[in-house]
Image (cartoon, rainbow, N blue to C red; front, side):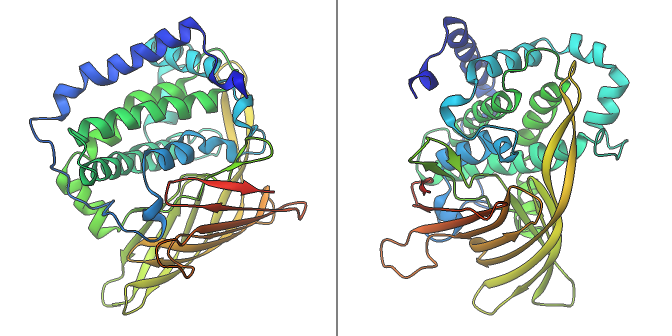
Length: 370
């Protein structure tokens, strides 16, 4: 476990550079002498459901380690090659033109930036827009709301720096031990991660996604395994609900993360809602070009049932025959009886029918018992 915390001198220099880059260059663009100015569309301090778990640590565990949902990744936190991954991410991020030229500028534009290709091998722009631009932008706004309600000075700046650091973590974990060109890192970091944060600085953008589309973070309940120091039941996911005109209680829904699922939601009088979704989940990534670290995604059917209260997720059930987790059930804090203490519980049935489970709390993480 100790090697998790051992970083080389060069890695410390990289981290210091990132902090300086995020802090002293970006801070003047964000604050505008406006400490508490967020709008509360994505985090309002609810003490129940998925929103009750939301904090920077919850975001870090779900987003920073999102990629380890793939079976090819090791879930044990002390086995991840953080330093090697970070080194390659920094190299590609701050020397982008060589990798883009070698990859092909037009290939970079049509596959990473603009929606011009549609195969699972080439349409890298799909997760870029959904997860990095919209999901990442909403995350920035939610973190700013969180820091605002916690009375942290300069909440916009705190949210931006927090998000960018976790973006580096996410890219580093995804990169693993690979060393070389990776234009996916470049498009993620420079175009979509930054772009999402700047896009969601707009009050009108926040209002559209927060009120019209009811965008919410419906991530899993991440837990640390006691037996092997692994992270289980993690993953960053988002739900949108668009109200159908002339139908007061019914909305179209789209749930996305490492899946894309459409469906319908029915809202009851008391603000609670039941949603049913069907779509595709990413099962695995298949390496297609070892020189550029490019992958294609294999997809399989996935089904889900959601129960929420005021757009804060209270319970979810996922069923997928072909992925590692065949059945995934999450019950969030506030659903089970309890006055001041109502824990969250999750249960997963693996493809080999092995069961694992865990307990989460409003600290933003839980304990895996298996």
